[in-house]
Length: 210
Image 1 (tube, rainbow, N blue to C red):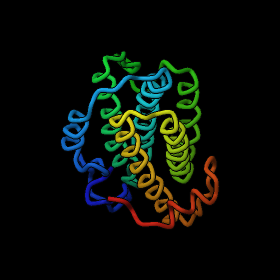
Image 2: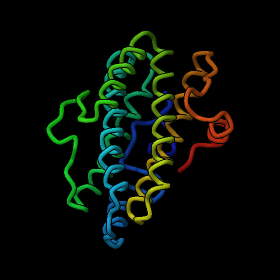
Image 3: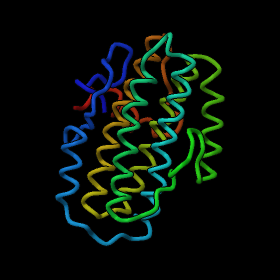
């Protein structure tokens, strides 16, 4: 997440290594290390591999859109830095449980998961049309992330994985608020594309979380 609870908006400072629920990335790493190693279910192993790639996708899309639209907004670059922290947290869990990293040696925009590969192509194409469409892509990515994280949490009981996923959820809520705010600055009212309207409103009508 972003420093000083900036949420990634145009006026937010560049993000620090802060990640939210457990404070800084270093503090969260210490917390994770202190938790017990628990047995992994097949669902937990699958979700860790998927989340590693999904967080990489968010980062890669935002870097690409930042290269197009940074003259108009800093939101993509700011949130890309946060996503790099998020995917590193998932990588830490892969190392902790001695699991292979599906993103090892993969270039930006390249994924083992074919669904994510196709999604990356679609999102970059859509977000390249205009600044407004790019901001809508950012909001959509955060919606998708939250849906997938909530599903993964239902299949997870390990304390360390739960902590990281909750942290990523908080980050996605803040990022969604930032993109919606940036769209409002363009006189555009965002309509959720994937989330239930009630869930969406519960996020965007509440303050940025620290």
